[in-house]
Image (cartoon, rainbow, N blue to C red; front, side):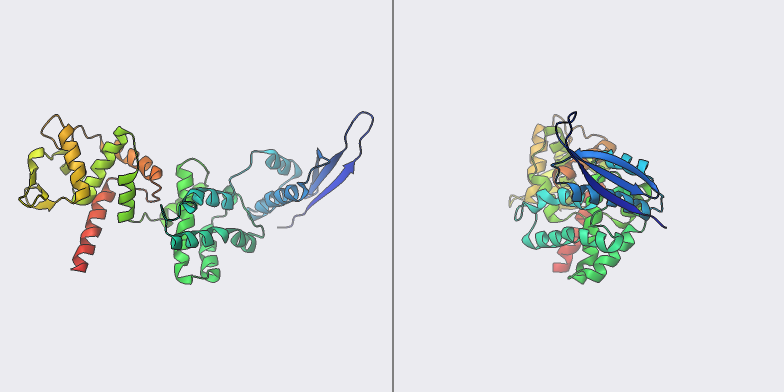
Length: 327
């Protein structure tokens, strides 16, 4: 597609009617133009030109013929969500908490991935930054190709793409960015939720929550350590908890007995003490409400996995597989 953009600046001196001079910016695009007055002491000429060029380049990527009127409209509108800024802002808190939420190795991996995004945009789209809503449908394919060809750790290129996808979906779910419908569907298909890790469960346990959130968190963790589904947990009674001669606590079911680890034992003891009936967990909310609150708790715990109550059973099975393989 043919197109043309030119930006020029001309100083206009002060007059009797105007006490101070100013700079007149003229942007010509595809045979049309617009003018704007900016302060004469402005040091943002390069930044203004870069913003105009980015908007113009994004129109070319989407095969749209942009006019000066549309260029000015987008230029004067609220700043869009930019790819690099969004990814960097989203991970800033994690990157500052080395040793608390992530290891130094994870920090280096994430930092390399994030810092390579402007290079990706420059090599792929001809600009070092791009609006998220301007990303083409081929974005994921281009991202995978870039990391596979330019990553210094080629065996981790898949993880780099996964990190970017996870961040974009996380920011979208928080309402911080908008995604085109086609790109959102691609990200959802690509970003298959990973299983919970022991570190994730520990984060869930340690995060301070309001009482009504903490109760749901405790039920979820209890499921992580027993593998029981929602319906089974609702039917548990205090009589099914038995303390053995060695002090260990077991949960007795019709077809099996489950030893309760220390973490799960603390939860079951706490909830059984406050229960006013024979039910181990009193007044369990609906599964729909639990899943809604688990999503909020995951965000507060900085867990990228989009967990539901079924995630607990999957975690239990995965941990049982690990234990069997170690024997």
